[in-house]
Image (tube, rainbow, N blue to C red; front, side, top):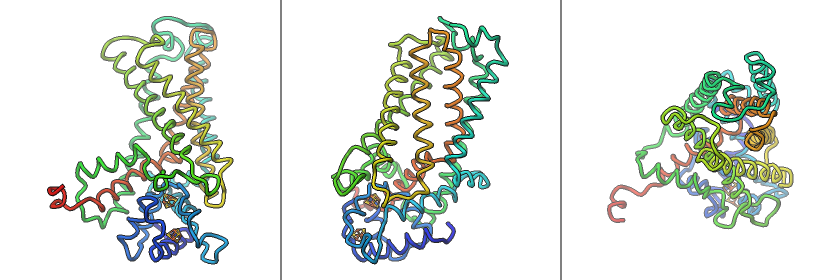
Length: 372
Ligand code: SF4
Ligand code: SF4
């Protein structure tokens, strides 16, 4: 990680916190901090991505502004996280996309939508696009299956590759000095912390979004969004098995597994993203970082658009609007895949890396495990 104001500020904050240690029960950041006397750039990048932005330490801090020490750890770490997203992005030249994330997302969405709509009308007659289609293979009468598979696999495959490379770069940098082994028990603890968002609980009380009062709302909204996303992904996987293994062609009945998973997932995604967007508007801006806001809002809007168009497509799939809705939904999905490695989504990947690092460096020694 390069030197700069963000890293200097995070280092200063960590040195003050390491002397104070008042917040050590709040989250994993403080126990990890206490294992260190000095903070290298890689250490700070690791700690910044371990922070879940619950803001508990800001409202608890006796050195927070207007105190002259001006300790604002959530803000310092948020700024550093943006730097780390640019630092580890793959391929490197595309890291610049993080700087103007909101604009880039809007452009990608516009081009993806226009591209899919143009391709659809180019491949089909107007009656195929604007007429009603029902029964087996109705979707493929509008957009051929081969086109859907090629577009989906190309964009999703690229996103997975870029995210995996980003994770590898983050790990190589931040875990270079890690002496402990990363075994299955380490992964189990890290995945448990990620799945429950334990570090977003502010030591058990909840987040401080608006002020010093605690609330579990952000954690539950994040769960609704994340598990909604997972359910939608599972719906696609089940539908793939139905089509390619069992030979059952979409659209599927309302109470089939893919449709139920997609509906529950879409509703969860919509509730989670909408709630998180509202929280962004009403939350206290002082412990936040303006640099993150554009990327946060852009990803939430894009996820909400994917969910809303998917649910609308389901509701209106037997009508004449199905063709256009299918093209618009597919456009949003492709846009989402394309911007995944260059937007706020990467925070999940690096946070998982930081949780694995934390689980490894705080794992009980082998001899202690035997005694347990
Ligand atoms: S955030 Fe403030 S109160 Fe908490 S450990 Fe740091 S200096 Fe101490
Ligand atoms: S997770 Fe919460 S308590 Fe921990 S450093 Fe971040 S804002 Fe502070």
